[in-house]
Image 1: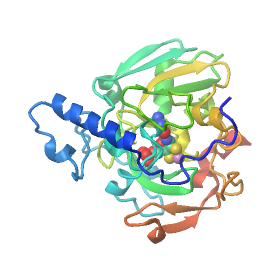
Image 2 (image 1 turned 90 degrees about the vertical axis):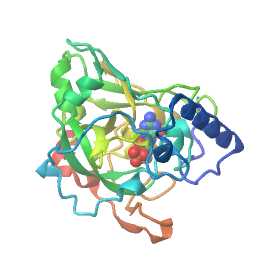
Image 3 (image 1 turned 90 degrees about the horizontal axis):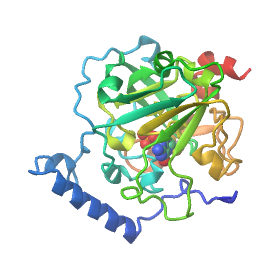
Length: 318
Ligand SMILES: Nc1nc2c(c(=O)[nH]1)N[C@H]1C(S)=C(S)[C@@H](COP(=O)(O)O)O[C@H]1N2
Ligand SMILES: [Mo]
């Protein structure tokens, strides 16, 4: 339906189009208007180093989980991670952080439905009410860039316990927030299968590594990272980690997902990091750690099976 040879939005930095500049500027102005007294000019304005806060929460003092405290690689600089993002709803380039400030993150509701005994709607109080911990995880994008970041959040299995899935529930679909009025996205190809969805087998969701992040670097997630709640699955390629989740459905059958629908030969449902299986258009044997300056200065390191997390997850795929 969408053709197999989808051009790869993520292979080249697409130049910003006049439409994007226009839409970006228009939204920016709208937001400034609704922000009222302009108190947020300095954190929000052009050239500022910070983005608009997604939610007002003090996340200081959250304990670091010692099992995930030493990724054996240096931490990516906070500002580097916050300025090099994938969030295709806002365009196919990496510099979408400013556009992403339009996501209305507070209030927020995550609806949990489908094959569960306890369907529920969780607001921000519920989400931030889970016992939170910090985990430093390696992160590997299918485009062969990588980072190491400290997430704040809670294991997905805590949510599983709370909603009590029925025995028929074999898969889980996660849906990202979508609003066409603020998400101008790539204008080609048309009819992309929005909203962004991802999926897991229920055993994958129950794995101790599977994590919902509410924060990063000691603070609530900036909107470009998927505030207020995003998925983090460190043994899988980054696209499996949907941002700004609004719905979680427990299903009997494997759900269609965004990238797998677009290009099934390039983006599998399972999508575990595997250096021995090249992407049809590039090798996955190595990865480049994002950093300051231009890509030519960044360090390239070998990619590990399951992104180095095989001891936790390899048994799921035996
Ligand atoms: N809703 C949504 N979630 C998404 C994406 C996206 O385009 N839309 N991109 C994915 C991809 S390809 C990657 S690599 C990570 C990037 O997360 P980061 O920008 O916080 O580093 O988000 C993932 N989650
Ligand atoms: Mo990615």
